[in-house]
Structures are given as structure tokens and as C-alpha cells.
Length: 460
View (cartoon, rainbow, N blue to C red):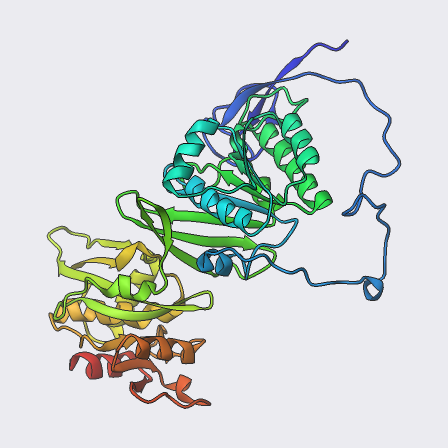
């Protein structure tokens, strides 16, 4: 019998080395090499074919035109925000990964969803590797989750979990979390790259062959990425990030991968004593604390997937007391801010090179689309000139390096959302006015240059 040997495996990229290395030569990360013991096993005869299709049928090459496709009906939960992020509902047989910071509300969200799915007739198995059944029951009582079709199973051994799934035949399975599960036959420590890869592969096989929807909770690293190898995100069907500040009550559910829908959708929840509650109109929340005559403030209509959201962009411009001016931003790309300040200085004659700039998107939301350029530029100019924008004005448009305002997409939805929230005037790119009729009740102002927008909005 062969003796076990020791190898060092990078916990970030799965690179293995026979000796310890302070820095992984493959991904460049420091202090990620962890010692693992590998026990050689006897070689087994390789089967003729190990690839099977769903339903354990032997797969074979087929012509594209001969393949029959039937659209799967989606199961909707009572959370419309979750349904939107998933692309319209839950697809049977899908593997969904949810990541987020500790204490952000991942287990609360999945327990609420499990209760809703079980109430509609689905059988749900909630597997927890971090909490006992009594602890989960305490949370369920607080969330008023009590159903005859919801089963709790505190276990970390994948062999036992698979046996119970085959016996119960549930419609939905929740794994909380994948880093606590242990695959049989893998000698490495729980939570290692080998364990996570093996557990995820087994869960994917269970989901596809039995047509069971599986929700998997994943821990995140200090950098905000899901812990474990990147292959974990490649193997699953959908990757959702649950974001938010522990000091605020609002949570954002964002899809970064979705094989059954858009990856630009966003759902917003509010954490209360009774659990997570949907925020039907996030624009009102983002704008409710805005001061009426404050300078350095501009409202932008940003698109998050198919949903328009009005967000306040704030800027504070003050003279620099050091040699190099600071450029600090929160929720906005720092490079985009620096670029727009250079355009304002060159095309609008604003002397900003000796000014410190501090910008943020209010409400903790992150904005990264080109249509926010005009609002950022207006907020900077408003703070620099100490002139407030009108409280009933909002701005949409991409700013080019020559100072032109370029067209943006989905302008009709943006204007309609601004009108619904009571705004009287919206500044849009002039080229976006072609091909559609502006609704009554809101003044749509087309601007072609940044200088023109500054003059009409601020009078400077």
C-alpha cells in the first residue's frame, strides 16, 4: 500500500506544490498555501463512458435541429425582488450560490424563502452545517416560518445528505454553507479547495439528475469574493451576492451570473425584527433625506437591469491644503470621477486642479453605468460654484472627453420613473429626443454639450 504524501495547495486557485511557498506562483496571492495530506488509492478500471445526461440516460452526439426543447415553468416566491433577480422565478434543477458577509442575512433570506416554497406545496430540506436544529427553529419562530413541508437537517457529511435526499425526494434543498460540508473520500480539511470542489460537483450532480433546485450559501473573503476556488462560481447556474452595511438596514441582492436571466438585475430588502422585507420603491428611500437647497447634489436616473432607480449623487469640493489634491469616491468609480473633473476643467473652465473632491452615491448603492456622468459633473460644478440645483431637476447622460453629451439607453423608462416621483424637469442627451414622444407633466430638456447643461441647470 502506498504511503500518504504531503502537498501544499493554494486556497485561491488550487495550485499544488510539493513544498511550502509564501507566495503562490500561479495567482500571486500571499499566504494561501495550506498543507494537505493525499492518500493514494488503488487505480480502478475506467468505465467506457462516464458522461450521462439528465435522467441518467446515455448521452450521444445529436444534430442541433433534432434536439427538442421545452421551456421550463418557473416557480415564483412571494418575494418579487428575488423573482426579478433570478430572471422571473426559480428554475427546477438549478444550482444557486448566494454569497455575502457574515451576519448580512443570507440564512434569514433562505429560511424565509424555504417557508414560502413549502407553503405552496413544495418539499424543502434545509441542511445546516453551522447551526443546530433548535437554533434554526428559534430563528424560524421569529420569522413566523412554520410549515409541514419544511425539514431541518443539521449535518456536514455529504454521504448522509445524499442518502436523505434520495430517500425524501425533496423539491428544494438549502445547503448552509458549502464551506462546512465534507465530501467522502477527500482527506483534506473541511473548507479546503479540494473539499469545496468535490462538494459542489456532487451537489450539481444531485440537482441535474433529480431535477432538484439547490440553494448553496458561500462565505466571502476579506476582498468580498466568495471563498474557495473560482471554479465554484463556474460550476453553479446562478451566483447572487447579498450586499449591505451592517450599520444600516437595507440589503441589496445582486446577480453576477445567471444562466436563466439577466445579470444586471438588483433587488432591495430592508432588515427588520421580523426578517427581510421587500422595498417596492427604492427611489423614494434614496431621496427621502435629501436637503432642499443643498449644493453639490444632483439626482440621476440610473438603470439597474430593467429597473430605473433615482439616486442622489453628492459632491464636496474644497480647496486643497496639500500639494496634491485628493480624489475620494464612495459608490462611484474613482477613475470616472477624475476623468469628469478633467473634462470640467478643460471644457467648462472650472479650476479644479487645486481642489479636493469627495463624492458619494447616497444610500450605499454602487453606480457604474455611463449615464451617470452628467449628474456627477453637475454635482461637482454645483459644489464648486456653491449654487444648488433645482430640487425638481434630474439628469441623465454620458459625457465625452470633448464635452459632448452622448445618448443613453432606455430613455423612456428613465423619464417615466422621474415623472412618477414628481420631478418637473429632466436633462437628457439631445440625440435621445428622436423617435419618441415625451410624456406630459415633465419638461424633457435636450442638451448637446456639458457647457450648455451647466448654463441651463446652474446658470453658470
